[in-house]
Length: 301
Image (cartoon, rainbow, N blue to C red):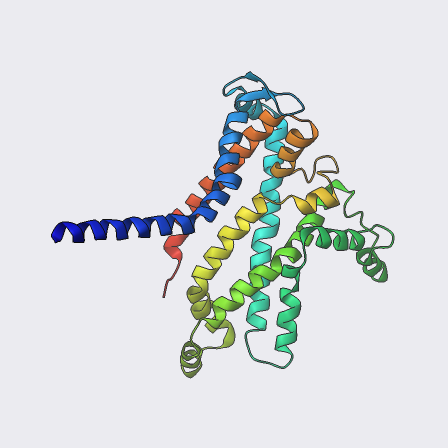
């Protein structure tokens, strides 16, 4: 009797395991096809030389990495990427936080403003880049038109090396604003109203309440926003490809665009794969550093 019961239990566990793996199979297939296999393939290609068709000609080991770290182009693209991150990430978070704070109070037309501020989330990178490309046009663009009204000389937004990265950063800030605004607004709505009422009873003003009470309670959401924004800035490609193509004079040639140029324009798949792995290592190291250093200051309720 006990042996029959044990056999039934084994069959039940087997059936549960088969059902569980069957339900996991679609996700596993997707991960293997679009994540694990491309990563393994990139590791292999980074140690080879290939022809324009992507066929392996010679196995060179770590030579692609040694050559990469000896070229000034790699350090230039890395520096441009860091500048791009510094221009976009803090500005986007602060701007989205300000908008979220202004629309947190249930005032008149708040819903309309929330819709407007969230709208960039629904616009693709390609569409947004075309819109901002028209705004940046040196002769018929709206930005230079407004500057002319103020008697300010026209700016060559996308063709001047000193302005090109700033221009792409402005478009990126606007494009990322929708997502961060929704995230930060949701974080603020998660703060109990009793907190605001207690602060008001204690005589705390709006600015003091926001700085000393709201920001600490919002720190988990801000930490998440920072992690996501830094990773997204490292991976920025579409707007740069459409607006500037890495120019002028490589002033917007971020590391992802450099990978694209090496792999899909110059057909140096080995060098492109080596850069992609270095970028992966940099993003992983910075993410771990942020979790190690900044998470200690996060106030979880």
